[in-house]
Length: 195
Image 1 (tube, rainbow, N blue to C red):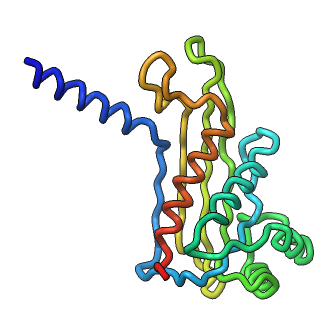
Image 2 (cartoon, rainbow, N blue to C red):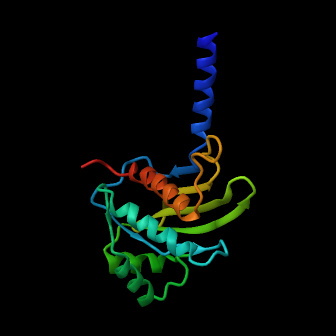
Image 3 (spheres, helix red, strand yellow):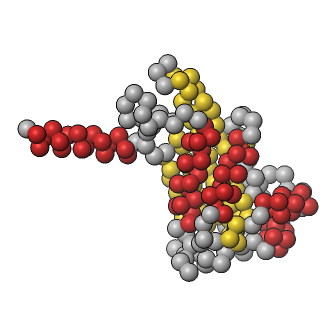
């Protein structure tokens, strides 16, 4: 009986822990690994969420998480912003081939990362208080071919990781978004060859 009960508890814990992570789907559109000497420009995310500053926060989280990775080089955001102004790029999700060429030459960039904040809210829950929901998508564009080489979509709720009585729940949209971005950047770094 003890073994059966232990097994049931173990299976239950595995199922609960599996629900902790945000739903992330990513798809690479290339077979070969990207060179580790690649330079990536993170473009400002578009805000489709209706929540003020959501896109800016996601852009900052991506910059922080990507700068810490050693598999590629992240271009300083000040230089990226200056180039966007110089070439009058208003939308990072609707880039023309000419804009990609201009940004690549100006920044000496191999790849561009762009995306959108889709949802960035905190909802009231009678039991947990605030429950955040965050959704975003992103894509990596090869500057030479102008093609998307990788896409990701991530959706998360703060109560997905709750084990019992609010333990394990994330209560802030900012904390949830940061964790989700870390997962996406870990997936992204797998596209690059080891040194």
